[in-house]
Length: 317
Image 1 (cartoon, helix red, strand yellow):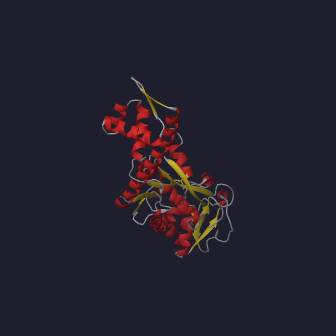
Image 2: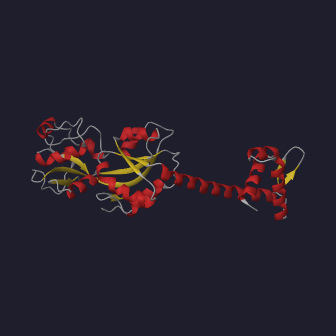
Image 3: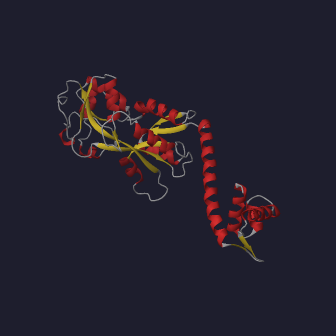
């Protein structure tokens, strides 16, 4: 008995005709019939009842077809997995990230993906959530990191062909400001307590529930900072805070990096509900690289990025 015999048996059972089964299997009808007969002789049991008009399964045949179908499925999965991993060496893994993540996670993901597969090359694309989602749908990206709130906002009205959202971590939000700022001595702050004259914000939400409770961006604070929030990069705004009385919201991963960079900034955690955002990887449902997203999720669970809350343990990292 070999895999080819099982494939022939399943084909005959599906088509109920040796000629049609042979055509579907790309083999001659006599060759397929002879192989099935040899298998029946080897097993000592009849698999098919052969009549003038059709071919039917015996009781034993139904059992062997069920087993053969499972075996063929496993073999196909092994073959597809090997094919996809061969592609890993030839095609880079294109991962989209938002501006609040890209500059601070490139090294983290480079190390991670090299541990998952040594030949897997990483290309990071930085864009806003809506653009990243579109690029995933158009197969320009393998996956993209966005918040659960952004995912719901972008795809909330759709019912078909939604990308898969794989949760990865929770991330706290901080209010960032220069050392010595009038607010810098606080242990925590609520969104409703942030002075409107200090806050500078971007139009694109970060994906935290409490953002709707924050004051709108202050044009006066932006002018004193010398920043046009319509075009400036997130990191540029944060670096300018050290020379101004303005403040802005900063996600946990970025805050951890800024602390290590000694930018002269203080980060006050937000208190109350809505101060955590759920980050995940979105990918197409027909994504062909088996196991890569799950491997990323497993690696993050074992060693999450600094400044995040582990989804499984829910403890600060």
